[in-house]
Image 1: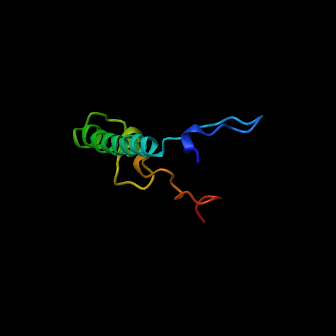
Image 2: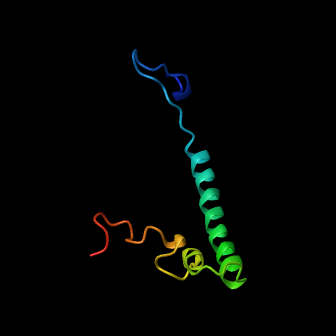
Image 3: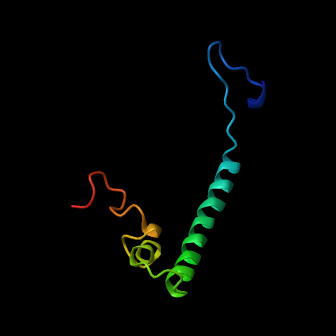
Length: 82
């Protein structure tokens, strides 16, 4: 019996190897990094009062429902908010 790594793809098909643990690891660190960015951006822009522009402050405010940290604003429901 051959091992899965030594199997040949049938004619006309391309073999694609996927390392699921690597994908999960990279995805985990990217998502955690994004959350850390949102918290730091909120602290620097809103708490530290880096910007006087209300739209920018609202965009990075993690406590607001329409801020970037809680995107998508409709909760991902098809058709938007009812």
